[in-house]
Length: 524
Image (tube, rainbow, N blue to C red):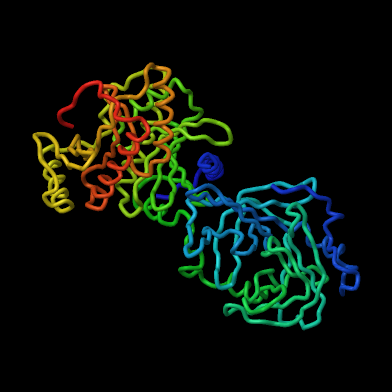
């Protein structure tokens, strides 16, 4: 169920949380007019046009959170109404990054708009992408405030070849609005859209900026032209106007971060705030806010836990051992060592009920951790587990093992063993959960100081691990594990988890060696 009260507060919290996953250069307006040669038609009016359009111009900056870091996109834009709506180029807010033969969808996208750039009143605000069109090449953005200084628009029909026009954008100097005079050199067709060919060149960061007449009316939007055409082009505002008045169609904003997550949230019954470019905030009555977003092909649920203190390391690993689905992890952000509660599940395996279960656990565990670091012990570690008849759960687990592995497992009195060449994986039912794990060995370190250093490394591994977690059991032995409610376990999940378990434990041994167990365990 959607939850739009506290919109501003939750949006701000989501923006902060996204930053924890992972401006413009000031300039004088007098310096920002076109530097075109004086023989350019209309050059003498550039400063006058600049004064007309400057307050309605914006700079657009998009941060994409990718698997290997972040990437920033920049472009120009202009306000088209007093309700905070603006136009920019679609490429300035794209949610994907092109590689050689593939496109990578960002885990999350944060879009910001700088108003009145290059002035003493310059400020940057968050923006939401309402629509985008690959065919037209533009996007419609919305900021959450009134914008009385917007640009007037006009149809392009009256514009003729040879007419003087002005290309407006941020240009290479991203903190300034620039205006360059030129002329309409012709008309062209590009990817099925009508375009104006211009006699003026602009930097690519000006794409999304307006092409205006001498009186400041918008007749086009700067964009890349047809591949076979040289020179600068602009999409006619007739095309943009027609698109704005059309009913949104599937594919106009394809690959928008958060679409799949929002569909799950809608069905889960959870109350949640509006998307902050792919990150959703779920508020709980215990003053914990749980965040959810897509990370590569996974759904990630997390709760920031503040600054990490080294003496918390061993306790964090113990805390993880008793958690039904999540893990404590540590990462570095802008020089700060931070801790988070989190878990990840393949998006293909996620169901609305599973998401609600994880989010409810996250809210409780985040609150518990605050007490745990102070020495408080929960009255019942296991009250978050879903429960259920152990024989029934065991029967379901055996059926999934059989369909996945055939006869490639062994049944013991309480568990199932999946033998491997180097690593044996164990799985068993426990209070409605299927527990899949392998023992890595004793906690490495000759003394507590060395163990605390290694504990931090384990927590950092947890942050990087896409599926499972390292934890410390009550014998002070390290375990790699995944826990899944039996009703949501699939053959694909089981197969992937077994493979990941073997790889992670092998990697652990490569780093620390096979540290002797503190207590020999004959079974799981």
